[in-house]
Length: 265
Image 1 (cartoon, rainbow, N blue to C red):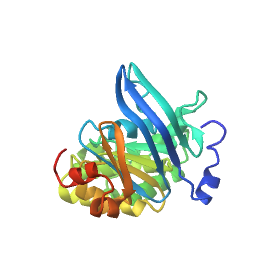
Image 2 (image 1 turned 135 degrees about the vertical axis):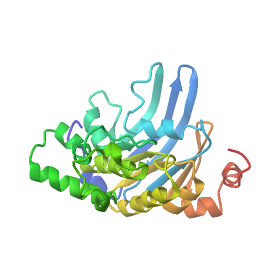
Image 3 (image 1 turned 135 degrees about the horizontal axis):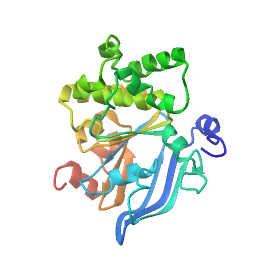
Image 4 (image 1 turned 90 degrees about the vertical axis):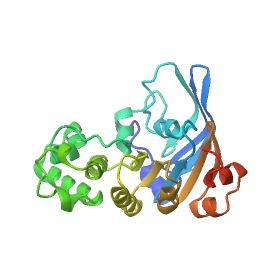
C-alpha cells in the first residue's frame, strides 16, 4: 500500500479500529444496495454480519478489500479506511490492500496444485523463493488453520483430493501465509458438514488473538457461538451493531428481535 502500510503498529498499539467505514453507500445503476453504513472493526475480535438474503452484508464485506471494483455500473460513496488510510484513494495499491485484507469465499476453491503450492502461492507472487522460508510458512499456516496434522504427510499431493472441510482450511491457510491483518469470510461453512463447520469455528476463535475477523453468516447459532460483535443488516441498512451476547439476549431494535426469533428472513 502506498505510504507504508501506514501507521499499522501505531493503530494496533492504540487499540484503535483497524477498519472504519462512514456513510457508505453503494449503487448498482440506480439501485441503492447499501444505505449509509457506519461500522468499525477492532483487533482481536470476530464480527458476524447477519441478515436475510439480499440485505447487503456480502456486498458490504466485498467493499473492504475492493472485490466489487470490477462490477460494471457500480458507484460507491462514503469513507472506508484501513489504518486510517482511505482504501478507495487513487494511489491505493490494491495488491497490497488485498494482502492486508484477505478473503475466504463460500465455496472452498483450492487451486489445482499441491497443498504446498496452494499455501505458498501468494508468497511466490511476492517474489519469495527461499525454500526454508516457504517451508516454514506452509507449516505455520497449516497449523494455524488446524489442518497440519491431516496434511503434513501429503503436502505434495493435489489439494483437490481433500474433503470439503480440509479444502476450506487450506484456503484459509493460503490467506494466512501472506500475514494479513484482517480476514474476511463470506459464509465460510455454508457448504460444509456440521463437524467441518465446528472445526472452522473453533479455528477462527483461536485465530482472533492475531487477526481482525469479519464473517458473513446465515447461521445464527454460528454467529452466537463464534463472534464477539454482531452486525444486523436489513434492506441495505445496518439496523444494529451490538455485543453478540447482548444482541441475542436483549436486542436493541425490534427488527433484530423479529429476525432472531424467526418472524422473518
